[in-house]
Figure 1 (cartoon, rainbow, N blue to C red):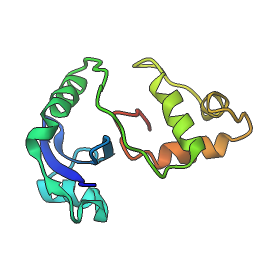
Figure 2: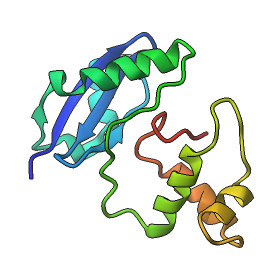
Figure 3: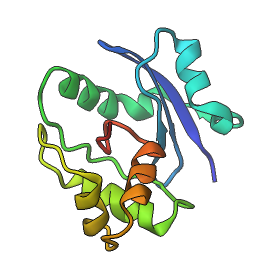
Length: 136
């Protein structure tokens, strides 16, 4: 299966994106240069095919988000290999209305394990697609 990547210019800086045929795998937060955006994707970009046009819709959604709008981020995500609890925590996090916050205890409960507060924090710390899945 082919992976694709791009470095997207946004009003906040350069953002690296990596996707498989199934969906977005990683999103690097805005960086000062295209080189840093690629570096932020880590080794995951090795062997991936550059495909800037493929991500134009995402770039527009990110710009809308940075302008204060609330885009839905309709692209599919490919988070295969993530622990099941992380997937549940990330899904719960995506349900939080824009501009609101929730505690890790709330997130753990929504992910199905009220006692997993630290694990909820770890899920957010390991979020591979920040902004699409809002976090810290």
